[in-house]
Image (tube, rainbow, N blue to C red; front, side, top):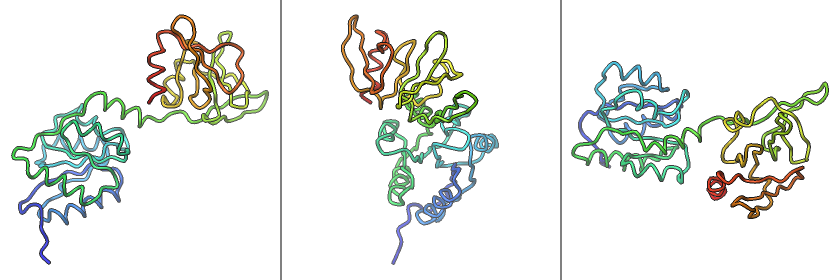
Length: 262
């Protein structure tokens, strides 16, 4: 049976992928679809890709994984000029990649399906003057950096002469009291910790925790009720007891509502 190939001329392709098996799989699919294509280089990190591009290679098309071992491949665009079109691959879910489509660059969900790769390559081939890749909207890039940031998953607390590890998912609340910072577990146990609330704001998963005031960071999973309060504020009830009312500061109400509705 005669196989229909996408192209009959040589194309130089750069693959940026930090998972060896994924890179080999991409190479195999490209060879099936474009037998004349040449994979000129595999790179597995932001730095390795930048070092290679500094040599001025002749590249017709790039296939870039978004999340690399040393950062996001978007950083490559921030640090050098990319003169060729790029198809991105990503392990993020389909909902997350919908926003990428507005940037007129192809994004393929991993594991990459050969038919979807073929369609992307056909789109590239049919373009009379394929445009160089552009960095996605800054809001998308920032969102992805937040998605890929490593959040603190546990806290070490001291109980007398003993140490105990508290998983983050067991924590209902972080709060300040008398110039000290404490965490409260879902079992209503309180432990002092050596972090400021500002530091915790950088360390905690923003999808799970929200700083509602100068004194409190709450966990979404432990909010049992939200009540309108005087001065356009909100009062939060948790499913653990608290010694004082937890109020959402007036200047944080809009962002808090947005956080709840994500």
